[in-house]
Length: 191
Image (cartoon, rainbow, N blue to C red; front, side):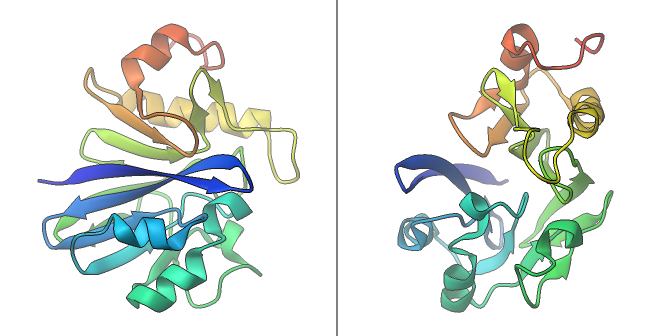
């Protein structure tokens, strides 16, 4: 059994989420963007890994500090890691990770950034900035694409179940059911 704990961080007055997955045999940090001491304070067990949903600064600024403190390997998609992170484990679409006794499936979900990924943990998804409360990640910045983000959302939506929670990069933890009802940016025809 695992638990996903949201850690809300402040980066220059801007809120960003990190998550600590409390897995059976250790903890996994997802997105070390800011306030590394606060992230590490949420951990309860030895660190098994640090996962990155995408390489934007607000999701990776505290990465090196957290790696130094924990010695945990970093897992990141190569399209977002190049030139930003040294010595990482590359993530691939469809990859199955077995970390700390927990199975995590990796889906490459570009659109907000070329190397954005979604982590599927049981019936839940850690989506980074793919889906935000009532919205989706920005597609007006370099490396982003509305067509790709729409296609990526169409990949993750069929996996949603009634109890699926979406752990977004910003804002509260979402429920897939509520986003299907209220998010005008989700592609039509899948609800």
